[in-house]
Image (tube, rainbow over all chains, first blue to last red):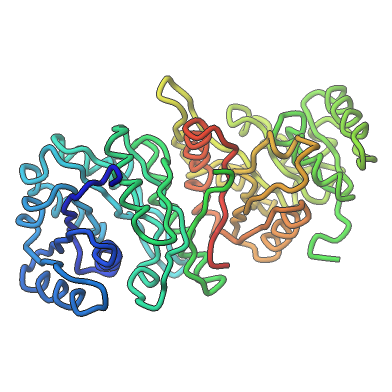
Length: 222
Length: 222
C-alpha cells in the first residue's frame, strides 16, 4: 500500500468532464469514490453512469457538502467561475483534510485562451485562503478530460505536476496520480508557484488547436 | 533548407551560461553565430573559447549593438535584471528583425525560486513594447544551460515552447530549435501567454532541486 492507503476520494465538481474523468479512472483502479455536485440527484446519476462502465462499481453521488464530509481527501474540479463560491462553504467539512485543487483560471476570446489574473496568485492559493484548516495541494491541471473519460484509452500518458508546502500531502497526491495507468505524479514546487502551472493550460489548449491533439506534458531527466 | 535559411544568429547576453550554451549548439550545427555582450572584448573571448571546441568555427564576438546590427535574427538571453536596459537601446538596430526572448523573470529566497510579476505580463511582452518595430517571439526558457554547454551531451532531450503572434517568425524559431539534436520546437501559443511559460522555469528549478535533475519538458500526443 502506498501513501494513499485506503482513503475515500471525493470529487467536488465530479459531474463536469474533468472531475468525472478523474473519478472514472480512480474508480476503475479500485479506489472508493464519491462524486459531489450542487445537485445531489445529478451527482447520483453521474455516479450511476460510472458504475455502468466495465470494471467500475461502488461510486456514490452526494451534494458537495455531504461529499466533503464523507471523504478523507477531496479533489476540487469546478469551473473557475464557481470556485470561491463552491469552496468557501466547505471550510468546516474540509478541515484537517487534504484538498487537491485542479482548477484553471482561464478566459477565452476570439484570439483563443488566456490566463486570468487571480488576486491570491492562483486558484489553489485562493483555496488555501478560503480553507485555512485544510492542506491544499495543486495538481491535475493539464490532464485531458477527453482522454480520461474515454474507455478505449488504456493509459493516460502524462506527468502531473503536484504543488504544495506539506510534504506528506504532496506525496499522497503523487501516489493518487500514480494509481492511474500511464500517469506519473511529479513534485512541481511550492504552492506559491501554482499560478503558472494553472495558466499553462492556456498554452496546452493553444497547442491542441494548432496541432489537433490532446497535449499533456512530460518532465524529462527524471 | 528550412524556414531558417542561412541567417546569421546573434545572441545578446551570449557570455552568460544560457546564451553561450545556445550559441555553442547552433555553431556546432553550422549556423553563423555572433556573441553579443556589453563588453566587446569579453564577447570576443567567449567566441574564441567556443571556436576552440571540436566542430565549432567562425563564431564572432561583438558589443551588443554591433551584434544586433550584424545579425538577421537575434536571441536575447540576458538576466532579467538587465532586460529592459539591454533591450531598449537596440530598438533601431533590431527594427524589422525577429527577436527571440528567452528571459525568465524569477526571484529566489530561502524557500527557493518564484516568479516575479512583470507589469507588461512577461519579459517577452516587455521586449515587444520596447521594440515596436521588431517581431518578438518567446522561446528557449526551459533549456538547461548545463546540458547545452556540456560537450559530452550529444542530444538535448527537450521540447521548446515557441510563442508569438507572427506565424512566419514562430516557424523560423521552431526551425532554430529543431537544428539542435534532440530538441523540438513546438508552437506554444500567442505572446500574451508567455508569462506562465517564463514563470514555469521556477517549477523546473524546484524539480531539479527535489530530484537532482536537469529537468526539461516534452509535450505529449504530438
